[in-house]
Amino acid sequence: MPQDQIIDDDEADTCPLCIEELDLQDRNFRPCPCGYQVSAPGPAPKGRHMLMRTYLQICQFCYNNIKTNPTMNGLCPACRRRYDDSTVQWKQISPEELASYRESQAQQAKRKAAARQKEMQKREADTLSRKHLAGIRVRQKNLVYVTGLAPTANENQLAEQLRTPEYFGQYGKIIKVVVSKGRDGTHNHQSVGVYITYARKEEAAQCIAAVDGHVNGDVRLRYATTTKNTRVRNLL
Picture 1 (spheres, one colour):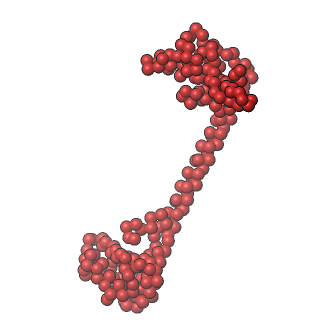
Picture 2 (cartoon, rainbow, N blue to C red; picture 1 turned 60 degrees about the horizontal axis):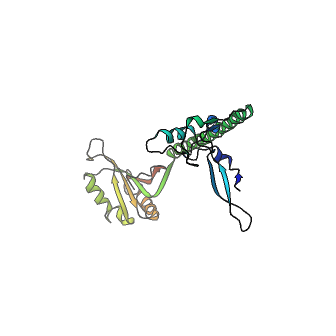
Picture 3 (cartoon, helix red, strand yellow; picture 1 turned 90 degrees about the vertical axis):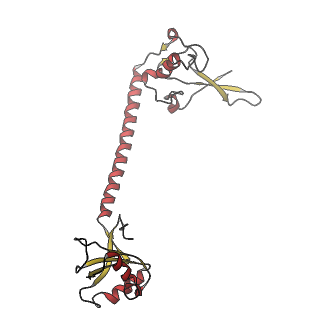
């Protein structure tokens, strides 16, 4: 004999066809006399085979879709009986069921609100963290910033010249040289800033110690600083 099976509350509150949550009217809607019973194998005494009968509930939307959609056959998915509005039953909703449903809905709304609040707080914390990091400047130990140079060559020529062993190339391997642009588009008789990226921080330290304030009083060297979030991508 088939044996009735009690399924999980979450499964009972969901339409098995569209997987949407059943509202109170859907839960008390009986479109077919079979009650949409689905039989499946279940535990049985040794040597016997037993079917477990599970009671599922479809929503009104899926019922109407099965009946009216030309691509559907209009039959109950369980017993294959043709759906008929005259056999549709509505279970009477008791005050206890109504109160339980309202309490369940209130608890779900409370959980969703708490989840939304938690997510909002997380986004706000991430935003504050990014703003905080944006204001932090990090000293780059392999990046030297040179000021006080007044070259007569253009930017490209100056960058190549500063790489040579006669200039900053004597202190180590240079990865990149960037000359800041002059306001009027030329560097003739105008002090410029130069960023020099060394392969190793020790080479940058040696360069600063040897050149800063020693070669010419106007030429000053220091470690360059970058913002935490950008790291001066256009320079490094």
